[in-house]
Amino acid sequence: MHQRKSYHITFTILLTCVIFTLSCNIKSSIISEEAAYFSLEKNLKEWTECGALIGAEVLIIENNKETFHKSFGWADKESGKKLENGSIWTVMSMAKPFTATAVLMLMEDGKLSLDDPILKYFPEFKGNSQITIRHLLEQSGGDDGKHGNGGHNVVEFESLDDWINDWSMQESSGTFGAFAYSNFNYGALAYIVEKASGQTIENYISDHIITPLNLRQTYVAFSTNSDWTKNVPSRYEWSDSANRFQRFWTHEQQPSWSFYSGALGLWTSARDYASFMQMWLNKGKFGTQQMLKESTVEAALKLHVNAYGEKHFGHGYGWFIEDNPLVFRYGGSAGSLAKAIVSKNCLVVYMTHCGNGKHKRSFEDQLDKMWFPNEN
Image 1 (spheres, helix red, strand yellow):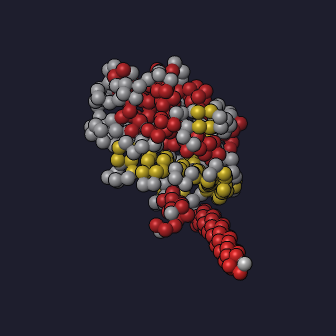
Image 2 (cartoon, helix red, strand yellow; image 1 turned 90 degrees about the horizontal axis):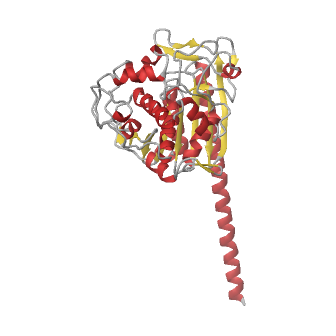
Image 3 (cartoon, rainbow, N blue to C red; image 1 turned 90 degrees about the vertical axis):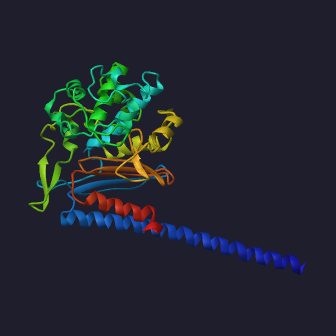
């Protein structure tokens, strides 16, 4: 009888200790997360106050739940217009994963093969005839982007056809099979989407990505007459001579390009871009829809070609990839960044209109401290 009582007391003490330990761990985790977000918010406020940043909207989603969403600074500092959640952003190169998604959808539909040679779509192509759609996706076709200032001569043309056909007549001095970042690769992919689908790239993305994902604040064409454009923040560039950011564009002006190029030309909100990334994070699934096959997503998120001499960093199909741990990401020259850590089932969308400066690197350093505290 005494022995049973002793066991009962021992078990009760052990159970109490376990509950207490779990309670302390949960409380510590909550405090740690709250402290991390407090630090993030504090830093972003300081950056806008000291001029290191004009404004930014930050959205963090963990395990399919929104855990942080705040805006800081100004949409237009000169007029004093504060930045608010739900702004529509010029994301520049962050359009590339949308173009890649369109290509992968057409592959799954049997409309093209990733091993199709570029000559199938550009019979008079002057570059390397070995280039395939796969190389374009990987940024490994050898186009070094030197022709037309890396693709930014897009502003000199009125249509995708004119721009890419002009490019196809040029030879490249890059190294075939090695990573070389070029907007032309994704312009060529947009052109191929049009030829394979029979739709314009704008209509294909609208019908097969924007509408199914219910992206209500995402657009592939800009007009100063559109109601939504008033929600687009002004754009800024850092001036070393003035030692500050200077405004060079407002929503009352047309952008310098006139068409969706496959490499740039997307306008979207933080929440919409997060929904697009969440589909990728969920292995191609959005709600009850399987937008891409799991096997396609798995193949796309592999590190296919190393970049910038880094062992664990490079390019997959449409995304920059880190493989230790697995991260897929993209940024744009307007200053924004989107990043997903697969093992943690979390993503962050950092939207801003400050095209250079040190803020993006500082923001990523802050994220690393939050998500990988033992490595910092």
